[in-house]
Length: 131
Image (cartoon, rainbow, N blue to C red; front, side, top):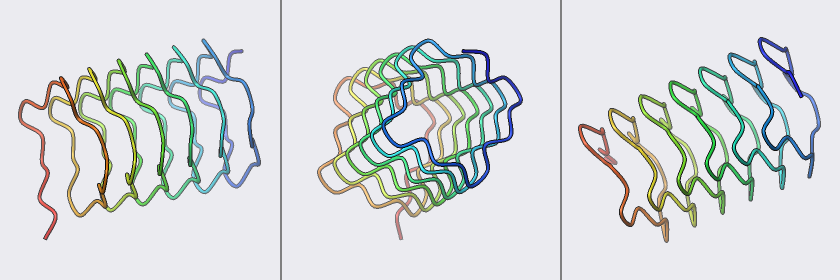
Protein backbone atom coordinates (compact mmCIF):
# COMPACT_ATOMS: atom_id res chain seq x y z
CA UNK A 1 0.00 0.00 0.00
CA UNK A 2 1.22 3.50 -0.78
CA UNK A 3 0.22 5.81 2.07
CA UNK A 4 3.02 8.35 1.58
CA UNK A 5 2.02 11.80 2.90
CA UNK A 6 -1.47 10.45 3.77
CA UNK A 7 -3.63 12.18 6.37
CA UNK A 8 -4.88 9.55 8.85
CA UNK A 9 -5.55 11.88 11.80
CA UNK A 10 -8.17 10.39 14.17
CA UNK A 11 -8.68 7.38 11.84
CA UNK A 12 -9.44 3.88 13.12
CA UNK A 13 -7.09 1.15 11.86
CA UNK A 14 -7.48 -1.51 14.57
CA UNK A 15 -5.68 -4.73 13.52
CA UNK A 16 -5.04 -3.40 9.99
CA UNK A 17 -2.32 -5.11 7.94
CA UNK A 18 0.11 -2.49 6.62
CA UNK A 19 3.02 -4.88 6.08
CA UNK A 20 5.56 -3.46 3.59
CA UNK A 21 3.44 -0.29 3.22
CA UNK A 22 4.96 3.06 2.32
CA UNK A 23 3.76 5.38 5.10
CA UNK A 24 6.57 7.89 4.74
CA UNK A 25 5.60 11.28 6.20
CA UNK A 26 2.03 10.11 6.90
CA UNK A 27 0.12 12.08 9.53
CA UNK A 28 -1.32 9.53 11.97
CA UNK A 29 -1.86 11.90 14.89
CA UNK A 30 -4.47 10.60 17.37
CA UNK A 31 -5.22 7.59 15.13
CA UNK A 32 -6.05 4.16 16.54
CA UNK A 33 -3.70 1.45 15.24
CA UNK A 34 -4.10 -1.00 18.13
CA UNK A 35 -2.90 -4.44 17.02
CA UNK A 36 -1.95 -3.24 13.50
CA UNK A 37 0.91 -4.75 11.51
CA UNK A 38 3.58 -2.41 10.11
CA UNK A 39 6.16 -5.19 9.54
CA UNK A 40 8.92 -3.94 7.20
CA UNK A 41 6.89 -0.77 6.49
CA UNK A 42 8.49 2.56 5.59
CA UNK A 43 7.32 4.97 8.32
CA UNK A 44 10.18 7.43 7.92
CA UNK A 45 9.13 10.87 9.16
CA UNK A 46 5.59 9.69 10.02
CA UNK A 47 3.67 11.46 12.77
CA UNK A 48 2.15 9.08 15.36
CA UNK A 49 1.73 11.83 17.96
CA UNK A 50 -0.81 10.75 20.64
CA UNK A 51 -1.75 7.67 18.56
CA UNK A 52 -2.94 4.42 20.11
CA UNK A 53 -0.31 1.92 18.97
CA UNK A 54 -0.82 -0.73 21.65
CA UNK A 55 0.53 -4.11 20.55
CA UNK A 56 1.46 -2.86 17.07
CA UNK A 57 4.08 -4.79 15.11
CA UNK A 58 6.81 -2.50 13.71
CA UNK A 59 9.24 -5.44 13.22
CA UNK A 60 11.90 -4.42 10.69
CA UNK A 61 10.14 -1.11 9.96
CA UNK A 62 11.96 2.07 9.02
CA UNK A 63 10.78 4.63 11.60
CA UNK A 64 13.68 7.05 11.14
CA UNK A 65 12.65 10.51 12.30
CA UNK A 66 9.12 9.37 13.22
CA UNK A 67 7.28 11.26 15.95
CA UNK A 68 5.69 9.09 18.66
CA UNK A 69 5.26 11.92 21.20
CA UNK A 70 2.65 10.97 23.80
CA UNK A 71 1.74 7.77 21.94
CA UNK A 72 0.54 4.63 23.71
CA UNK A 73 3.02 1.98 22.55
CA UNK A 74 2.43 -0.56 25.30
CA UNK A 75 3.47 -4.03 24.14
CA UNK A 76 4.58 -2.75 20.73
CA UNK A 77 7.27 -4.63 18.80
CA UNK A 78 10.11 -2.55 17.30
CA UNK A 79 12.50 -5.49 16.96
CA UNK A 80 15.08 -5.00 14.17
CA UNK A 81 13.54 -1.63 13.31
CA UNK A 82 15.31 1.60 12.46
CA UNK A 83 14.22 4.30 14.93
CA UNK A 84 17.18 6.62 14.39
CA UNK A 85 16.28 10.18 15.43
CA UNK A 86 12.73 9.11 16.32
CA UNK A 87 10.93 10.98 19.09
CA UNK A 88 9.26 8.94 21.85
CA UNK A 89 8.90 11.89 24.25
CA UNK A 90 6.38 11.20 27.05
CA UNK A 91 5.23 7.91 25.48
CA UNK A 92 4.01 4.73 27.14
CA UNK A 93 6.59 2.06 26.22
CA UNK A 94 5.67 -0.42 28.95
CA UNK A 95 6.42 -3.92 27.65
CA UNK A 96 7.71 -2.63 24.28
CA UNK A 97 10.39 -4.64 22.46
CA UNK A 98 13.33 -2.74 20.93
CA UNK A 99 15.62 -5.79 20.61
CA UNK A 100 18.27 -5.27 17.89
CA UNK A 101 16.73 -1.90 16.95
CA UNK A 102 18.70 1.13 15.81
CA UNK A 103 17.96 3.80 18.45
CA UNK A 104 20.78 6.18 17.58
CA UNK A 105 19.94 9.80 18.47
CA UNK A 106 16.45 8.73 19.62
CA UNK A 107 14.55 10.72 22.26
CA UNK A 108 13.15 8.70 25.16
CA UNK A 109 12.72 11.67 27.52
CA UNK A 110 9.96 11.23 30.16
CA UNK A 111 8.82 7.83 28.91
CA UNK A 112 7.26 4.97 30.83
CA UNK A 113 9.49 1.97 30.05
CA UNK A 114 8.54 -0.69 32.60
CA UNK A 115 9.42 -4.17 31.33
CA UNK A 116 10.57 -2.79 27.96
CA UNK A 117 13.41 -4.67 26.23
CA UNK A 118 16.37 -2.85 24.73
CA UNK A 119 18.61 -5.96 24.38
CA UNK A 120 21.27 -5.61 21.70
CA UNK A 121 19.84 -2.28 20.53
CA UNK A 122 22.12 0.46 19.21
CA UNK A 123 21.53 3.22 21.78
CA UNK A 124 24.32 5.58 20.72
CA UNK A 125 23.57 9.18 21.69
CA UNK A 126 19.96 8.55 22.73
CA UNK A 127 18.24 10.80 25.28
CA UNK A 128 16.74 8.62 28.01
CA UNK A 129 16.15 11.04 30.85
CA UNK A 130 13.05 10.04 32.76
CA UNK A 131 12.85 12.57 35.60
